[in-house]
Image 1 (cartoon, one colour):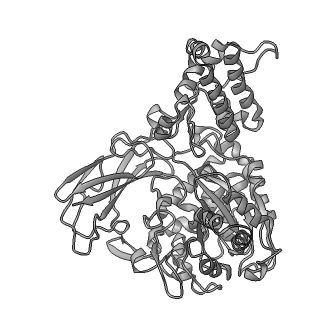
Image 2 (cartoon, rainbow, N blue to C red):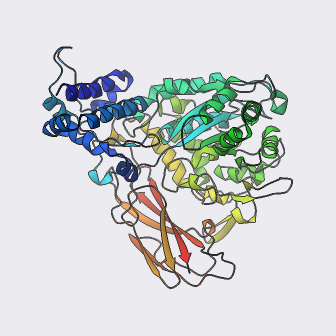
Image 3 (cartoon, helix red, strand yellow):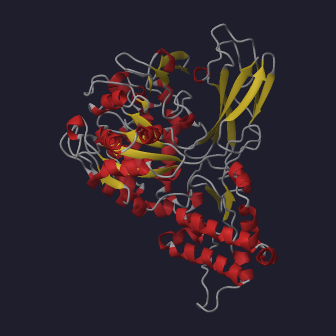
Length: 591
C-alpha cells in the first residue's frame, strides 16, 4: 500500500508543481481520454493506471500480485508528467488537492475519488484530449500525433511575419514548436529581430491562461523562449561557411537530432541560409550515412526563394524534401506562387477575390486586432497581403484534412506536385499544370494553383477568428469550438483508407458527428478530384446530408494502376463564427 500511495502522491505533486497552470484546474468534471486508440492498444499499462486511480481495491490487488507492473507504471507516469505537466493539472478536479502534512498524505480512497486519469502511453507526443465542462461525452475525439515545426522568420521586413506569428501562436497546441529563429532575407539583409519574436511571446504568455481553457497542449511562454534564437546575421550564402555557425543553426541541428521518429518541418518565412549553415556543418562533421539520416528527417516548406540559399540547398542536398514555388531572389515572381492564394488576389491580381473581405484590414481589425487581448493588439494592419508566410505551417494544423501526409493531397497549406521544373536538377514539390484546382464561384469556374488555398479561405479565417476569441474568453462556454467529424464510425482525424472495385457502390456516413457547444451541424461532401488520380465520370449522390454514395465506374485510359479518389467530409456548425472539421477518405480502385 505504501508504494501505491507514493505513486498517487507523485501524481499530485507533479500537478501542483505546475504553478502557472493551476488556474486550468478550475473546471469541474474534467476527464482525460486516450488520444490514439492504436497507441492505447500498444500501451498495456494504460488501463491499469486508470483503474489504479479509480478503484483502491484494484490498486491493492496490483500491489500484492504485480509489483513490477506497478513500478513500470510509475516510470511511465514520470515520462508523461515531464512531457506535459499541464495535462496532469487538467486531470485534477476544481478543489485543490494537498496533503494535510508531509507525514499524513491523502488517503488512497480520497485520491481515487478525486483523480480520474487515462493516459496514452508510448505515443510520439502530445496526445491528451481533455473533455471538460461544456463538452458532451459524444465530443470525445482521438487526436493525431502533432507535427514538429521549426520556424525561420525575417520578422520586421514587412508586417506579414508579425501577422503570421500571431496566428502561429494561437495554434501552438497543434504542433510541437522546436524553434523560433530570427533570420535575414532579400528584404532584410543586414539585421535580425529576435526581439520581436520575444515581444510576441510575452503577449502570448498573457493570453495563454485563457487559451488552455478551450484546448489542451499549449506550451508555456518559457518553453517557447527556450527555443528562440537568432540565425545567420547577414544575407544569403555569404553568411554561410566554416566558422559561421549561429545559435539558430545549432538549435536547428539539435532539433533534427532528437530521438523522435517524426519528421521536422522547417517553415521558412524569409531566407533559408540558417538551414544552409546547419547542413553545411552537418556535412563537414558527420559521416555520409549520418548526414543522409539527418536530411531524411527534414521537411522544408519555403515561401519562394528569399535568398540564394534555397537554390544552393536543392543543388547540394538532392534528397532534401523541399516545397517551393521557385523564384528569383526579389519579389517579381511571387504572383505565380501557390502560397499567394492566402490573400494575394488584389495585390498580385491572380485570384477572383473569393471571401476577400475576410483577409482585408476592416475584418482583421474587428476579429483579430481590436478587443482580442495583447496578442491581437500586436497584429499589424496588412501592407501588401495578409500573412504571406502562413501557408508554410497552415497545413500542419490538425483539422482532419491530413495535409502533412502529402503535399499532393491539398488542404490549407495548398497543393503541390513532385516535379522537376526548369533549371532544377531533381524533382521538388512545386507548381505545374497539375497542382491547379478548379473551383466554381457564382456559376463560373476558376482554375489556378492559388485556388488550392483560397478555396478554404472562409474556413481558415473563421477558425482564426475563433482562436482569437479564445484569447479573451475566460470560460469555455464564451466562445465557439470546432465540431467533431466522424466518418463511417471512425472518430480519429486520420485518413480513412478504403478499397473498391469497378461497379461497387460505397456509402459514406457522418453519423455520430457532433459539436462540443451543442450547435447544430451540417455535413457537406466534396469529391476532391484533383487530389486523386482516377480519371472517369464518378459522382456523389448527395453534396449535403449525413450520407452520400458513389458507384465506381470503369477508370479512363489515362488512369494509373490502382487509381485513387479523395472524398472530403466537412462538418460545419452554426455557431459564431461558424466552424468546420474535416475528414478525408481515400478510395483505392482495385482490379
